[in-house]
Every structure is written in C-alpha cells, then in structure tokens.
Image 1 (cartoon, rainbow, N blue to C red):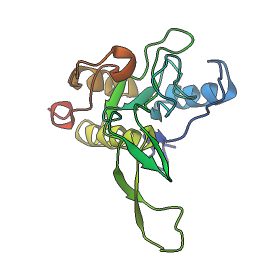
Image 2 (image 1 turned 30 degrees about the horizontal axis):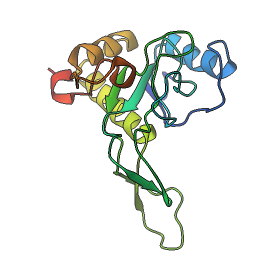
Image 3 (image 1 turned 180 degrees about the vertical axis):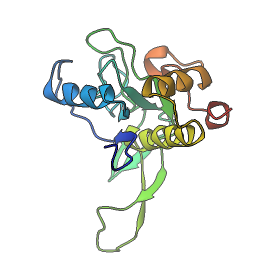
Length: 182
C-alpha cells in the first residue's frame, strides 16, 4: 500500500446479513486500519431501527458514515422510501455511525450503464455519503500529511456539526469540511 500511496479505503457496500465483530470481513478491515489506513464504511440503508448498521461498519475501529438527509423521500428504481440510514448502536453497544454526510439524490458516475448510456446517474444511500467523508479525509491528509488514521478520526469528531438528531442517527454530527480543514 505504501508503494502505491494508498492512505484511504472507501467501502460503499455492506452486508445486511448480521455479522459479529469477529467475522472475517470485520477482521480484514480492522487489519487495514491497524496498518495505518483510514477506513470509511457505509452505515447501510436498513432504516430507523437500532442495530441496523451493516458490516463492516460495525467495527469499533473504522469510521462508519450515515446519511444526514435521509428524511427526504427517494425513488430507487420505483421503490420509494425515506429514513433509510442505518442506526446504531451495534449489537455490541458501539455507538455508530460516527459521522453523517449528504446521501440523498447525489449525482454519481453510472457504472451500470443501461440503454441510454448516460455517464452519470442520481443515487441515494449511505454509499453516497461515505465518499464525501473519504474525500474530506483525503483533503485533510493533503493538508497534514503526517496525520495518523486515529488523528483523522479525532479531527472528524471535533469538527462535526451537531444536527440535534439522536446520536444513534448522527453520531458526532454532520461532516463540516471547512471546520475540518482549519
């Protein structure tokens, strides 16, 4: 990873199958964290009930990202829903997500090009929120290249904007990039 200059891993997927903290998936991402990488993982889109953080976001080490704007009704392929962002705590009583970012109606590249071959599409979910936090971490590491992954996590915590939502929904609060980079 050092030879490639990789510092951040963005995981915009999650397993809805309930996994424990000692699962191979969680152990693998924690191994990456232990090697010094910043790991940002989606909280999942399982909704308002507690214990709905998808794996590997249940890891107590990594940065789990929820959506701050999930109250807005969205249309995912004819399926309408809202309040989708995964909520904590985890089954092990770890408060998750750590931070939230916009995730509703985000313009993204269209990897699943269909008949129209459009290069961009509109998507919603914590998989759209997570790259915003990963990108903010990249900006932070560009400004402060000697920061550790733990320092990045602490800086995200200290700079987050409290939205007044339950901690099980917002964690520390919403990503605030201008405050993060101060």
